[in-house]
Length: 245
Figure 1 (spheres, rainbow, N blue to C red):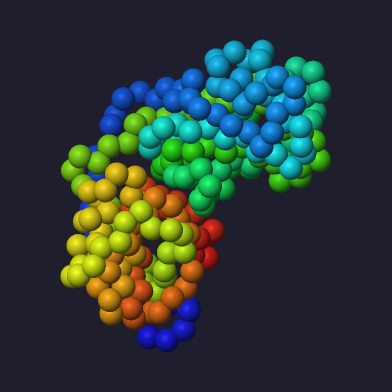
Figure 2: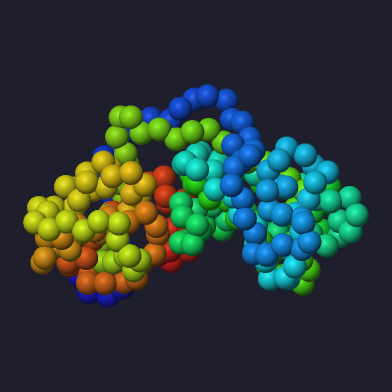
């Protein structure tokens, strides 16, 4: 079948087990960073459990992000504003991803002033390890007094869903590349057994399987290029951002 509008997606394996423990603030005390820092108002102040200590960037086109250190099912993210000059925190965007510098999915947006605090409730299952907060209109430096991420640990003891995207190749550097791999199913299985792997790319003519810990794709050969992505890495929002569908 010719043309770039062709899209094929199906489940390779259909069993995922989630831990059912109550959601807690999984960002508390985790490593945090920001684009730059004004005076001593560092990024870790947004994950210290104290709403009276705040971060502050020097530049206007700035972001703040936290590494949750493992994958969580993210239920909500609450940001707390400072008391003074609270009007400066506006038009906030929330991103969730699996790597620090790779693709992160836009999963929330608050238009206008935030007020004292705002909670991004994520109704669809959203998984990730990295949370990033920024603004769509970077007219002011970014200031946050606390970022609380309500989540539960992800577990896949009984297997993993994989979605197959026909005609796409991965554009980042691979974690590992294997030769003489017989099929996309074997390639997906290799990814499931590799720590931090969320994407596998299988090339039919060369029988190679490349494993990745990030999301970055472009259109390839519709017959020979096959990308399989663990379903926890794909939401309705990220599907549109990554594949336009």
